Length: 249
Image 1 (cartoon, one colour):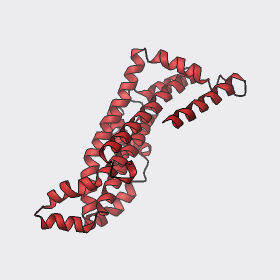
Image 2 (cartoon, rainbow, N blue to C red; image 1 turned 90 degrees about the horizontal axis):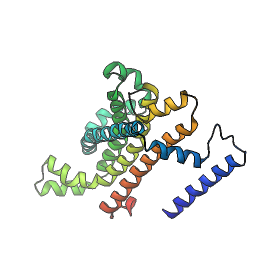
Image 3 (cartoon, helix red, strand yellow; image 1 turned 90 degrees about the vertical axis):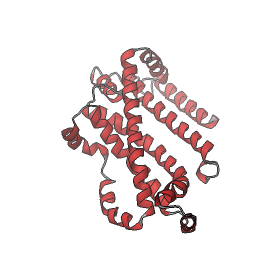
Image 4 (cartoon, rainbow, N blue to C red; image 1 turned 180 degrees about the vertical axis):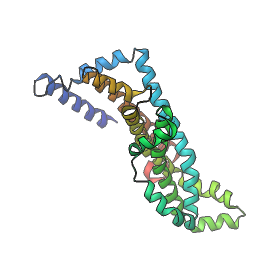
């Protein structure tokens, strides 16, 4: 944490020095002191806060939808090699398609409002959760499954009492990856397709309305801070819940 803060402080100091010394044109890249002051002003305005809330709310809802779909699907794929083989081609075909490439199709299907960014962000978030869950379950020791069955656990009991606890740290890792992807997609869809409100709409308006790079950077900084807070929160949760797992020690 201290090293991270020191690295961030060094970067900001170098940025500030480069602009103040004239090495970088402040009209195109305002110094962090200016961006910070602008951000403080924005956080006191209701319109900007509504944009932040719109983005964060869509992000969290999309992440929840993705987890609700991808975790059960990943458990099913992981526990059943025939199902995994049968769906392999479809999954590998859909997974590399960038969510933003589907914007025209999604707008035609559900419209260009908040539904579009929810749909696309949920789609993008689902893949890392699905993959981490499926491969964690597929890697489960067969002796554990056989022991559960010998103890009388049915298929559902095996999934919920053996496979899911084993996969839980991997599911959380998938959520961390999905959180970053989901935020990128939500802001990108707001930026490219419009969605009424959101950080992407704010950044687009600031860029097109006089080229206010200070406002663009302030809005972008909020998105970055939200992503950083989410990753830090999920990592701390993982350390608390899964101390026995190598990834969270």
